[in-house]
Length: 268
Image 1: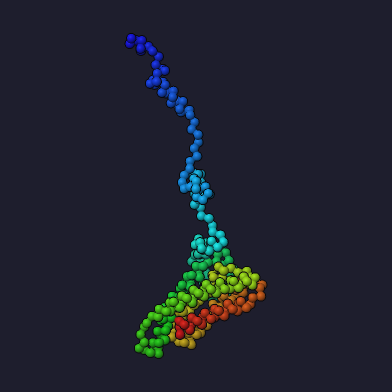
Image 2: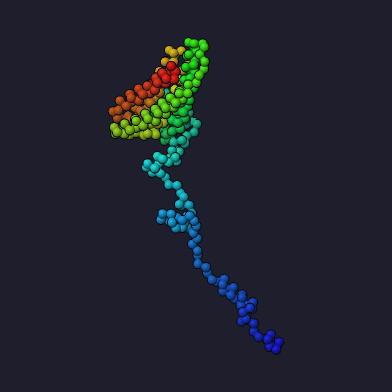
């Protein structure tokens, strides 16, 4: 009986090794269809539902450039106007001290900036507030030796309101007026022009600390004339070919009015 059992063929038994090997081979020949992997987050353009394919995982997160009025409220729209280095800013500051050239718009044509507008205006605010208090104290001390030092905080509010208000509103008004009159105008370039026109008042404020009234008026008139000529000559070259001489005169007078305002209110 033992010999008969051992002589039986074993290749067809379920537990035999050859059968298992055959099944593994047949299983290895089975081709798995290619899977299309999908990942979250859903992004099929249908209101945020569905899936996003593996081939383009970041398509839904690409930042789209803002157009029209949306760009006004997008901070990234203004980064290009602050892309300036020290050499560029210093060169434009020096140009504001030579007002007769009238080529400022040619220098900023490729890259007008708002850095100068904000930095110069803010510097002028603190200079006027601090030096205005010092100048008032020196004048009072000259007439009355018993005068004690006191800081007038209202100078800060007055300087901030007048400088920032002038720097924003006046270029904006010229922009809309020129557009209304049919002349080409760029608001960013106007803000850049008027912003750098304030620079001459910063060194002039140091000189206005001199407690001599007659000399103070000479300093502020010279500073105001330089700032006014800088704006007027460059504005004239910008709108060349248009009969808008009245606009140039208005720009000149407004700059002179700002200079007189600085003298009367901060260095009385």
